[in-house]
Image (cartoon, rainbow, N blue to C red; front, side):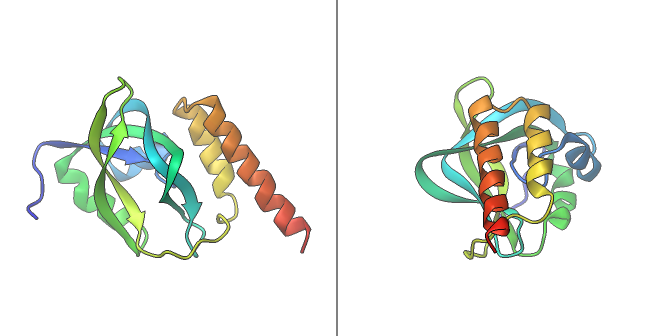
Length: 152
């Protein structure tokens, strides 16, 4: 598949959700606002990094960015080993469903999030103005992870 030219839309939902991190990796990117990936749920791979899996009725919220196509090699390099760039239809800040690229883990094993990752995601959720219901889901996930650790 030939590499795109011009600009592309990117959906950030995990470690790339904080503005400072995304702008460090992809200078010149423009933040558009919150966006949703319907039919998917946030999960974590065996390394504890964010990923999504298909779950009917679920939505993963993240940030929509316009990125220069020339930045794709930098984005690819910044992603952890075992992630692939792909496209999915997302609900844009303006409402319509549009194609955006994102990175998905190729590993199917699920595990707990890496230490500190939920705190990063919660801070970035506020920064990106993600829906309060989704922020509450992240908080609940953090409580579930904490209770699992406490019961060991």
